[in-house]
Length: 241
Image 1 (cartoon, rainbow, N blue to C red):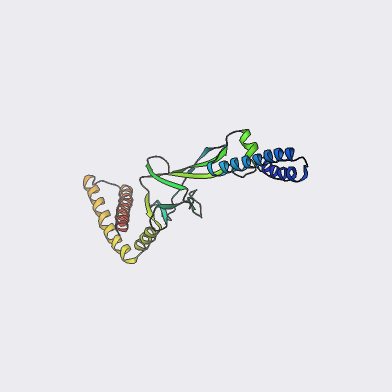
Image 2: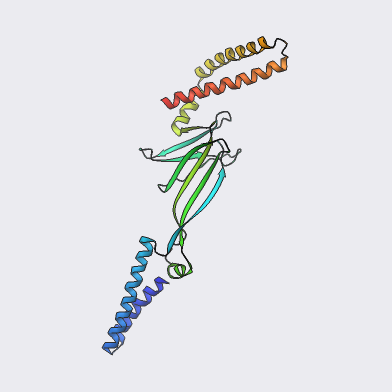
């Protein structure tokens, strides 16, 4: 309505000044029309620059997230820095365990990402803030300005299990390259064999009558334990570099 009032005031000011012969009446009506025009411009500027007639409202959405890593034994959250100062980051994840494509947080300066550790489920809580009209009167006057339901900012709080590793995209590529190298795999295979044998022998010393099924169970547990330790050490090395 403020736009209609502005346009109508401009037209009336012209009509009153040109087509009314009585100068006194013409000047009064023209002055009132110009006053209405200036008032409309004033409140339009207040609405656009200082958000007059608007207030902030927020919406909150929680999304369960899954690791973007191809390895189930190595869950991680990958991020990409925006700019050289690393002030803004885009975090990459999946929205389901079987998702083929990854999702990422918005690459906007109005987006704030906070990573927190949790013992609960991995999730991202997104709080978006919009400017909305305060009441029906504000909507009536400023509804045509396009300032209603206007995006302001968002905050993503990312809750990650302690088992997850947070790496940059560069570090993730480096980790994958190192883990898949033949020299690393050969070294780890020999070390894993020794580690598992030591664990099995220690268990059999305590229980000489251990069955083959029990030995297999200990072997599998020791193998997984060694792989986790080796990967943790490799991640530590990547971060140090």
